[in-house]
Image (cartoon, rainbow, N blue to C red; front, side, top):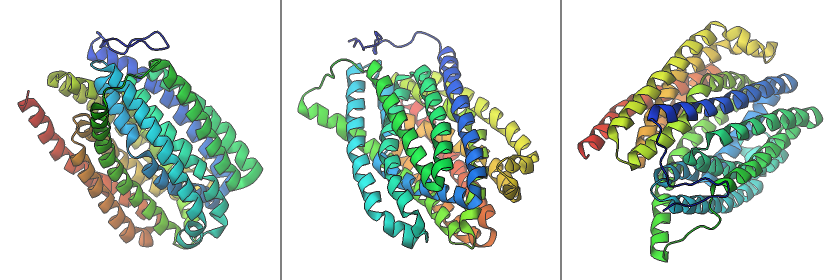
Length: 443
């Protein structure tokens, strides 16, 4: 069956191009979007870091980390679930793909609203008793908008990735990047940290609206629903997958938030977090190419798994692994050599964070491996194993942060990240090797 969309496209026919060609086209548009988005994000971060100083920049990072914890719960793993199930069924059962998008976005709207209200009610307690910064209560209240709109954009983006509409995603990334530059910098200029948080909320609101318009082009005029029993079965399958994904994300995000809390509890802790946040922006820039390829690869791997083609599956994964490591190792070495100058772009008070940047740059290889190998477990539906390894990552990160941060401050936080991702990557190598062998033996 073929389902026509408002844009005149059909959702049922598999692309006849080779895997390499499909990967190249998707990767090109994903790369364009990532270059624009990450470039604008880094530029806005540099300006924000200069305007706010280390303490103010650290306060913004803490607010983002706190709302991110609520946002992870609100998202309920639905973005990843939308990517997998839309990609897996868009050719064989396009009506199911449309139902998946409808179910995921509806749940996200409800859960996003609930968790935004929870943050609003708890903002005073969190600011005063947990963060030891009662003056950030208003900023945390405003950040409830980030929870709601961030939840929606996460699920919408996951659905767009599943449909393989990477050209639209590139345009959307550009829109979000421009909005971030304008709203964040203008907000900081007008209202300091509070103005910056308002700018972040406005950015996510515009992104959610733009994503909604893009999705409407890909969805059919009317969603076909099966009988109630079949609909509930589909919903339970998606909820099981997203539920385990949620639990894994909550564990890792909680560990990262815990590390932030430990750091800001130290003398001049918010300034230390500001330095770490600046170094983290450079690590994110190192990871932007693999991150650009990631949605393309996950979509194709899920599609190949759905069509039972293990040979093409293995070749695609090998290609992605080789390319991703190649584009991270060399820039990481260059960034390590130029660490002092790179940190100095944020301002003279950030230069002492060069060792923090060196450690984070070294950890980027382990982070890439963690993401790439995790895609095997997600695309094959082995989400329970992915959850177990997320728990391992979170436990190691929390323990290492608790032990190292009091002694080494932001450098200890970076070391904790390096150790955690290295351990998780080693465990993933063993697990994914067994998973791929099991998949081939069942062919």
